Image (cartoon, rainbow, N blue to C red; front, side, top):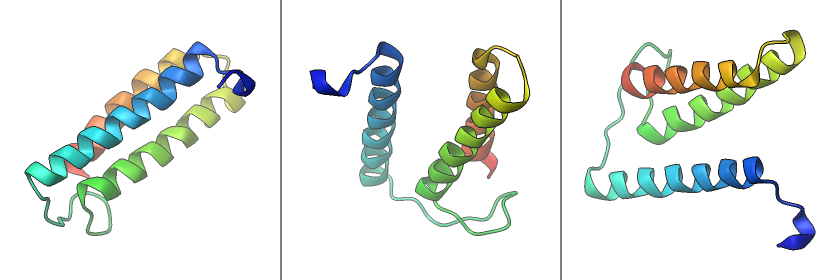
Length: 90
C-alpha cells in the first residue's frame, strides 16, 4: 500500500465509504427495502438514494472548491445535511 501514497484524509474517506456500503448491505439483508417515490422525480431504493447523494455531494464539493474561498468543511457539513434529507425524504 505504500506505493499509493495514502494520506490520512484519503484513507478516512475510503474507509468511510466502505463502512457506509457495509452498513447499507447489512440493512438491506435485515430489512429489504421497497421502491418509493419521494421528492425526487423517480422511484428509488435506499441504494439509489445513496448513489445519488454521494454523486451530488461530490459536485457540491467541486463547486465549493471552484467557486468560493470558503473552507471545505462548510461543504462537508452541507453535504451531510443533504444526505440526511435525501435518504429520508428523497
